[in-house]
Amino acid sequence: MTKLEELIKIIGDESVYIQTHNYPDQDALASAYGLKYLLEAKGIESTICYKGQVDKLNTIAMMEDLNITTVRIDEEDRMDETSKIIIVDGQKGNANVEDFIGDEVACIDHHKLQETDMYQFFDIRSDVGACSSIIASYFVENNIEMPVSVATALLYGIKMDTNNLSRGVSDLDIDMFYMLFKKADRDCIRKFDCCSLQMDDLKAYSAAIDNLRVFGNVGIVNIGKDCGEAILGTMSDFIMSLDEVTFSVVYSYRAGGIKFSVRNEEIRLDGANVIRECLKGYGGGGGHATMAAGFIPNVAEEEANNISRIIEERIIEMAMIR
Ligand SMILES: [Mn+2]
Image 1 (tube, rainbow, N blue to C red):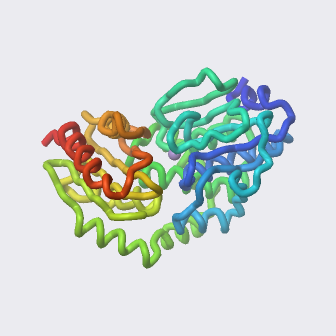
Image 2: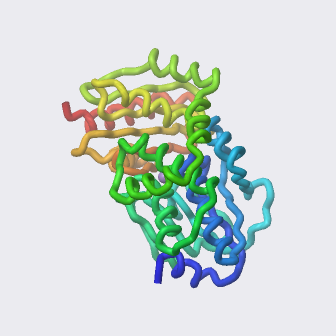
């Protein structure tokens, strides 16, 4: 039995929710979109949902151009306790995966394996660079043809999550990239690549340049208040592109707490571990060895400086290896 067949078996013919992590990125939405198509091919209706909004321009362009429709549960509340949920590109219990009222029966993900007792089906492969690659492999294994729009979304998901096949790439990502590249609309991808920034984002670049402090191989930026989720990650990538920096942390006081974005290219370090350890006693973190995030909730604005100083010291202590 293929993975998809196993999944179908536990769903039956009920309609389901496909839930991505909060504030979904390209890989999360592409995975959900691909899975929705697969389920449809097997006669199962599904609704893509998540908490938060999509704030990155190229992600919005991808959703519009490829017709990816989603529902925000906080707006349109049709889910109940018996609703079945398949989580993609995240796992139940993660700080960035909202615990909706429905029943999380399945999970398809590429982050570090966590608690799986609650799932009737899971396919979690932490060595894979993009969840989109796992979904693409379901098409291949089950001989299901994909439309151009699905190929384009999945290709873009792999491209973005692996930073153009340069971060955390596995053989599966390369194989699926190769397969999808021939089916996708490359003009569309080029268009998404050309609209990754808006004028407002430039302020974040300027703040990143002004506030960057480098300690050995570690680059840290306090980007200021209310930096959007997506741009925080973009800034972490940006700092990482400096030759001197192999471990970057960008943080912002936001939504009553402090939000951290981490990038790492040191083989001896695990970004998810570092941020989890460093936030201990204050908040939580997780993700991948190369790309991770964290959040400290319930921080009064006047305490933010003190807390972030403590966290910074911990990060430097743990991640400064040169
Ligand atoms: Mn992903």
